[in-house]
Length: 328
Image 1 (cartoon, helix red, strand yellow):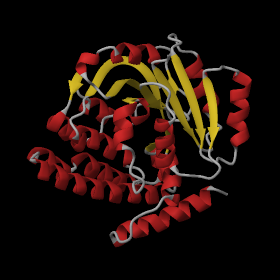
Image 2 (cartoon, one colour):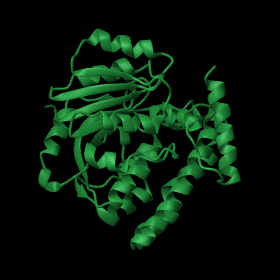
Image 3 (tube, one colour):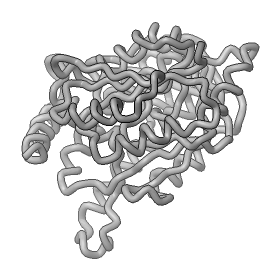
Image 4 (tube, helix red, strand yellow):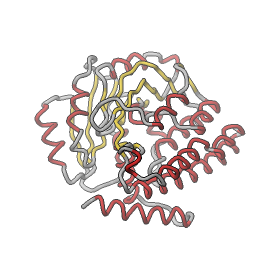
């Protein structure tokens, strides 16, 4: 039985899905399975035909009859996994040939009792070449040393600045399924899931082996609405976890969650850059990822609880306008 399953949630990702699937097929360790979950994408023939052409029995294609949203697609990926470990790979990211080998070797350390594995990551741009946006330079500074991390100190580290690369993480299916992904969150559901696992006492293994390529794209002109939504959701999420960790007695983690310095600095940087004429930036706008874009589109479709701040409501309305414009 294969040790890990690569699950690829798919929605309008035709530009890069061939690269992504090719990177899966080129693994030096052939002990893997792959499932593509098409969330009712209008270009379903693209990925369906691609899978048919590859003709690899380890790869299967599943399609939702209606669009369920990113959280439900993640949940489906966990529930249909045929292995003990799973990776929720971005539809435009790439595995390096040693990814499965690195994860398989890491999962043999059962005595470490880890439920999450963060391998080494290289950031690439739309052209597939190495890139180094400011956000990723900060991530590299915040990243914890190789080894097993858990408890309040791991929570503090991520609350000060989320240095993980979600699509690259290998998850123990049993633990990930237990905590799931919050349907009422959009761009922060990944951090919320990880903080939930940490609160449960689960452990993260960090390894330095470079085996994953995480693609970033130049932000579009509509990024203001996206950023407004993200910052509002980050504020609410950190407020919630400050309360939860405070009740748990993790006072420093609660303080870090209330301070959220990385989120505040990111907002400040974005606001400052927005005042600079685009021509002066030489085309080097702030970066975003397909994960961000996918989250942005699916947030509009997802259910949000009643209430919330006026600013957050306005951001959601602006975000809907952005998606309508970009869908034409």
